[in-house]
Image (cartoon, rainbow, N blue to C red):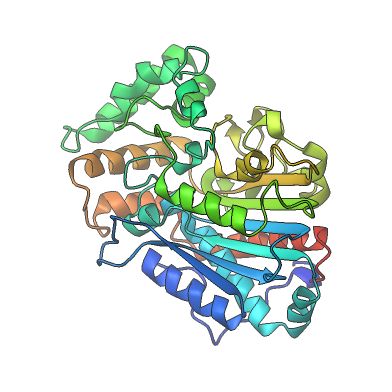
Length: 401
């Protein structure tokens, strides 16, 4: 049983926080954000639409002292960087906003939090969430794309940064969708590469990101994508900026799924070089923070460049006041890495040949379930742990929950 302060109130009068589509998730998020009297900002992507012709937007709900341009504290919570993974983070955000709209004590606490902003970013990759993809409309993995200095993209192609082993493995990761006996070839190729290079090295080569192959997996792109550009401008305008000399603390939790034990969460820093170990442990405790290159729950970990949870570190790199920045990925486990990789490869092989593959096709459903299992137990555990993480962050910025 959860500690009383982390209990999730019954919400029988509301539809469930989890959604079956981007469109439904967006509607719920906006409706409950209005009920919670949040300031809402919607960033529409140009040139793309959802499966039903709907507009695709990154939606932002701001609570607390949303009138101030120069906050002292910012808690940033984001979902959907990896599209199809977004349903967990979306549900956590919807659940939190519902608690705000129902809990008068929490409403008063937020209203009294002068100089503090709570910023919920819903569906960082709305295209991927709508079309059930991990990547965006240009096959770019946005969690490898948040490189704010354009020179960094060039650097990723240099001899010192280039993902050489991915180049060797790439042909095995992009089969045609009509490849005979997909599973036969997939498992043969994967097992061969693991035998040749070892499991840890192969996993890191595949998942850490690459910047050469536009049709490949985990492709970081050659320039900042339109969604990230819009987000950078918006976050800067709300106070995550080196010109904000009042800023003292930024907390960022970016929700993902797919890595680790089914239904369990882990807080994974994007890179050990930028990790504030003491800060992470002070917020989330030592038992759930992954340290080093291998974790007992998540298995082999890998460092990435351009992940969204480094956005505050990049934006505030030249800040004269040097605010404290605690940023992390909250990862919820689903299935084993080989099964998840199979689903990603299969969906990508279809998308490369048909950008409008219906989302009810088995290949799309398979990808969705790799990141959002059809399990009420999994949903319950995600909501519970998501609520606890948000409360831990609110406590850190002195908002009583």
